[in-house]
Amino acid sequence: MYPFIHIGRFEIGTFGILLWLAAVSGCWVLYKNFQRKGVEADAINVTALATVAGIIGAKLWHVFESPHLLMQIPLQLLLDRAGFAWFGGLVAAILVLMWQGRVAKVGALGMLDLAAPAAAVGYGVGRLGCLSSGDGDYGIPTSLPWGVSFPHGLVPTMQRVQPTPVYEFIAALLIAWYLWRRGRVDKPVGMITGEYLVWTGLARFLVEFVRINPRIYFGMSNAQVASIGSVIAGVVLIVWAQRHARAITQARRRPKPVTHTVSS
Image 1 (cartoon, rainbow, N blue to C red):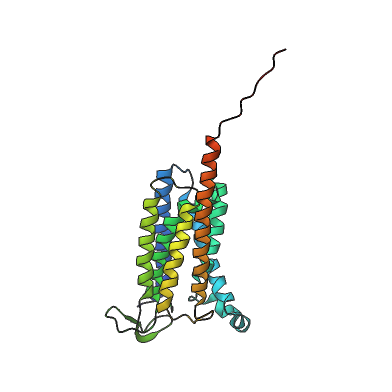
Image 2 (cartoon, rainbow, N blue to C red):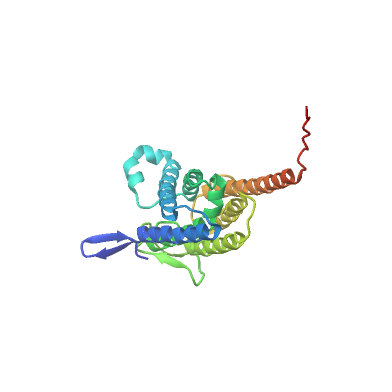
């Protein structure tokens, strides 16, 4: 794999190129979702703010996962081109999207529902950047025929390892396809977001079994613990969305009280 492309004296990181492509892909999906739902909002602006927030959140989460290293080499850790935590990026992007939903007058959860398929596509394409740069997001050694090595990666290895970014790319596209189809018919507000959290969390939890991340809590990695939190939050949101929609429907069906006027 090639973490950098050299053009004369210029050096371009392949991770950055794929990150840009991820933002463009996600923006296009979000734009198409705005179109089919009749939402008048700027998909480019929404995507740009969410992407920047996601990058910052992912970096900060990764940095604060190693407080001892942060105290020893703060600048090196902050400026390192490798090291981004999925959960930190997810939380930061969600907060920005909720704010953008209020600005666009579609509601915080409404914007998250609209952005869920786009987020899945963007995440999947972004993972290919991890593959091209060999930034350490690969898996454990394997003898499978599709195993790859990263002799020139940012975190090099000569062993053939599990290409976990490819697994996540495939899973993300399947999740995006599922959410897009689900969005054809109006669902209770928050339902699509809940399903995104469940499926994305489940996919990340499973892929961690063949990742090289250290096991910290009860034999699970940090990402697996965060994935469980994502699944739980998704289930809670789905249940809430269903109950909230049912309550609204029942309220609309109740007969309105008849008022009698007394003539003098």
